Image (cartoon, rainbow, N blue to C red; front, side, top):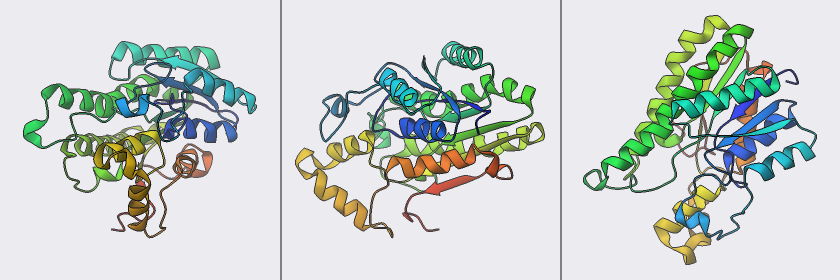
Length: 276
């Protein structure tokens, strides 16, 4: 994939899926613009305390890491829920590398008051999650598609979630935002297929990310993290929680020429968490 240029959103967390995706693409020879809303990204209060192995590394450190591995990388900053920021990030990427033909929409709203009973979800939380998780990817695709149409080649991968496929307690907002993203994927695959652009979604299950760990701490407390990890892993056919690199490898495949006949799919990468 040495001829291709990608932008990946939500990359500032060293332990996150976005940074893992950037590493996988660089390893495949793709030039990558990594983006986030700030140098260290949008972290929950738990993540900001750097507990349980959370790193203080951020976007600039990731760029240095990718370049140190022989890759071509650029950091761009912006809020995916704001159209002017999205347009700016896409323009900077295309200007720097001369083109843009891969978009990975990974940025997602950090956990907050949306994880609640419906009567206890503030409107501000509903608005925040839907803007970042659903509107953000739509704006990114809208800004990037003209570059892909010009080249008659493109790859779009939207990071959804298994929670967009099944019901989960107190996740009506988050789950709905990810379900919306999967439907966008299907509709745009139909619209963009004639232009040589594939559009797919990846639906991760549990991963060893800082966000996953912050959720565990929120639910069961800091002292019970390891026990909860073991309980979660025991529910899965593979009996372990995924490393983000395992999900990133699927994203990299979907971005490649090898996936030229794969489009309109929402692929679960969940260790068999939901077998049907």
